[in-house]
Length: 448
Image 1 (cartoon, helix red, strand yellow):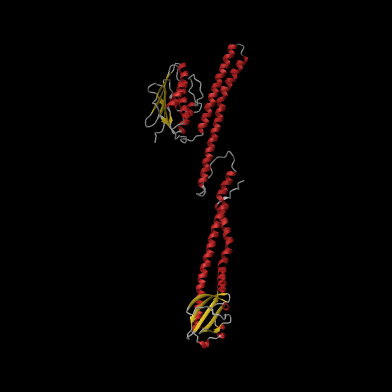
Image 2 (tube, rainbow, N blue to C red):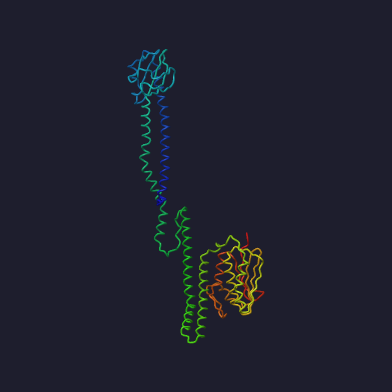
């Protein structure tokens, strides 16, 4: 069982507070070392100053009573000891000074020593009279006490301010993340059918890409839903007629008295089923193609267009021969394009099937594959072509030119246009100069 990830707010708080704690710790350590250094220098100077004052006295002026009453420089004087030595004899000391020498040093300067189990910082100086040696010592424990007192006075305000700083950081992080919470609430309360874009006004730059991505998602979902609605409406509209015809022919077959009449009705029923099957296949193919954005389906793989186009013509040749139509192909040995084989098959099948279907018996349909700067597929026929008013409506769903005497769904050219847009092709429809009928030219983008 995996633990749920921490919220962004919690991670930000942990990161900021962790950095704050690290900085605070470094600041305390730096303050400790800096204060200790400055304090040691100050107290060493006090020891040197006291020793220098004592050194100005004569031997007669230095005795135990005068040393005990000597004015020191801070309130921790009880921890400062004074000693006067002459020729190895202790001639005077303060009340808190030990009888042993505070330092073994006999020249001017500072030294650390251990006397009577206690640690001392001692400044030694030679007196005015020959043979006088003065030790002024201070307990290290007194220095630590002063250092801790100084640190407490510096750190307590920081400790007292820390909760306020944490609260301010928490409030700031929560405020900065408010746009994300508002975005989440606005998406959560939306109805399933509400796919209008989210407003970008007032959105922070860091959140704007997320909002833009959501708006793009909403737009794609709206387009997909609209495509599904169109498919449902188209299927209901177009299937109504063939299904009604199938039902009628089935009723005729059911009520037929003669075998010949029943056989004709059943044959018509099968033809109606075939038309309905082709219509459903075209509707499904069109629905799949409509889910592809323009230009995004361009394949990086190379497909030889000659082979699939040849197979399509071979499959359609029997129907053309049955009507006395001529089906010709002009193509190089190979013609690579960046479109999958299945879609090349769909393009060729729809264009050639339409040309054969709407051309009269005995007509000619010619398919030309040409290389060059850009590959092209040209399908032209010797049929009647299209009137100018029909040219402008070419590509509308279920649009069929009346009076042709041919059945069809009107979806073939819509399917071709979808593939053209999805793969970045160019399509041109005009009159064939060679055959006099309709000519359709598809051009692929030039190879990079």
